[in-house]
Length: 192
Image (cartoon, rainbow, N blue to C red):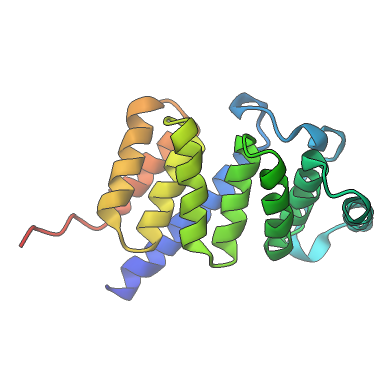
């Protein structure tokens, strides 16, 4: 595959991850994990996780060590770690939280983004497929799968998921992004 297309697909996927990460904080897309309401919604830069965010992370790690049976605390810690650009650590707490509360769609979507960031693409795809099994028209999962497939060079599959997003949520912000991404995908290869 041409390196120009690979770079383009990588940029598109990264832009989609940023859009979904920003949109997961939007109240119009559904509630964030219940325990995250008391914390700041501003995401620090990787180099700039404030002292208070680091203190919150350390406090929640202590809470989880004492009692790891609270899904909401695991999700809260995972989200803080994700926002502090520590996806590898966040995956551990998302996995723990989802083992306790597998129905938390928002956290499952966030978990998939962290999995992608650490290079665990098949697992990221699996998490989005799990969301779609319960919520077949979830816009974040449809968008993410399109982006993941595009990033791995499976453009026909990307078109399928982004097409479903456009059909079910034509006015959604992610549908707008999917529409733009579809225009930039290389043309479908002819059947042999």
